[in-house]
Image (cartoon, rainbow, N blue to C red):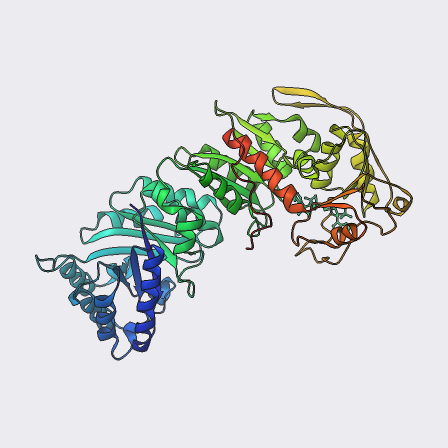
Amino acid sequence: MTLIAVAISISTPSAVHRALEAAHEAKAQGADVVEWRVDALAQEPAGAEAIAHLVARSPMACVVTLRSDEEGGRFSGSDEERIAAWVASSDAHPSAAYIDVELSTYRARDGIRAVLNRIAHAASPSKDPVRIILSFHNFQGRPPGLSARIAEMWADPTSAIAKVAWTARTVRDNLEAFELLAMRAKPTIALCMGEHGIMSRVLAPKFGGFLTYARTDEEETAPGQLTTRELIDDWNFRAINQHTKVYGVIGHPIAHSRSPAIHNAWFREAQIDARLFPMSVAPSWEAFKATVGEMFGSSILDFYGAAVTIGHKEHAIRFVDESGGRVDARARRIGAANTIGRDDDGALFALNTDADAILDALGCAVSGTRALVLGAGGAARAAVVGLASAGASVVIANRTERRATSVAVELARPADYHAGHHAGELPALDVHAMKLSQLPHERFDIIVNATSAGMDGGGSTDENPLPHEVPLDSHTVVLDAVYAPAMTPLLAHAAQSGARCVGGWEMFLAQARRQFEAWTGSPPRSAGPSSAPSI
Ligand code: NAP
């Protein structure tokens, strides 16, 4: 079983009481081990006594760590202070279960090695052993000579556990951490820090990691740590095993994405052993191809699919085409895919679930209606293709008029495509462009906002992209693809005019439901939360 170690730092003897309380809280949340970060405490005048007290009162097995300033900690004291802290930890009743020492410190001085060797072999019938963790950290990026260092830690007879942690430059670094775990010669901790490293923290049990670190609600001792509650409740950490399937949501930026919360809750409800991770991938074709290629290509990751968002939806089509997979005709017509998955025979497929999600969310008959789509980006193309394929006559209008005209011209005529072994014809659609200034004289049954106007973080939350003079009444359905905030200026105006309003969150859930079904073969069991979970 992979242990959850909650890391708590203590700077002064007066902070010991609160630290013990925090450890009790973490234990109640499900942590197995507490890592006492005594970097600063060990340099205090009565530091060793306070450490002995902390260790003896620890509510869980504990790791005692003095992290040096060269490896991201605060210890810059003497060897005497270091040794006094270790001896206090080993002599306490009960003693520390583990002492973490950096490889560089351990290597540097015979005296230090001798003390640790004595501590590691001091077990007796009345005293549990103290196990030495040899560790190596790099906050800048992947450490040079990683393989040689880990081999040295594995070969050392005094240490029981090897640990390496570095700041991931990309999500691909997680794969290297997993490969190290898979080939371990002794119990090993291999973790990636920072926003790209979350997979390595959560998936440690899949690869037999000795432990993963968690943070308290108050303090993070390394970037990217999750709380014990997040690991256990949100990620269902205890159920992760070697067969757990892995999915990602790929975009740039991606931290705001609600997809992990939604899909992970659905996987759990359906008792599907899978987790979906946020994967921030730089917005270039090369970065997308390298990342998704390595994920699907990994023989140990069990990567089964990805939701694809901002910046990469066109890359998703190209990637699946180049892999010889199947791109759904709707996605090809839109020119973008938001879902990649694997068929039973392992072949990749790409879909765009946004177009059908708009129809699902509208929840009304579309055939024979007149629809307006505002915008000319990916969401607008999906709306046009979804509505026109369902029999609506569609008008597209956009702030930059020529973009709307070019979308209308392209989608209004049939087109041939040839991609690898696949070829086909994309049907002509009933769509034409109008200027925004022409709209006040026009009536529509359905209006879809597929612009970013009104979106949180878009710099224009008070903007309504629909000219006010466009007539709205109880026969009009207005869908705003923007889902944060839930009530946009457009929806507020539409509601006042008596129109039926559909929020972007309904569309989001609908596109996610279809992704889930494409990956697992069944729709999710529950509808999902009625509003976007906060992040
Ligand atoms: P995109 O490709 O970047 O297109 C953005 C569109 O918005 C462009 O047509 C742009 O017009 C227009 N625009 C931006 N700011 C505007 C403003 N202040 N006033 C008027 N028009 C403005 O983005 P996208 O991927 O199509 O996404 C568009 C929106 O749909 C986003 O808010 C996105 O979050 C949302 N969306 C929601 C879902 C869902 O499931 N609910 C799914 C996909 C997308 P110009 O051409 O003039 O720049």
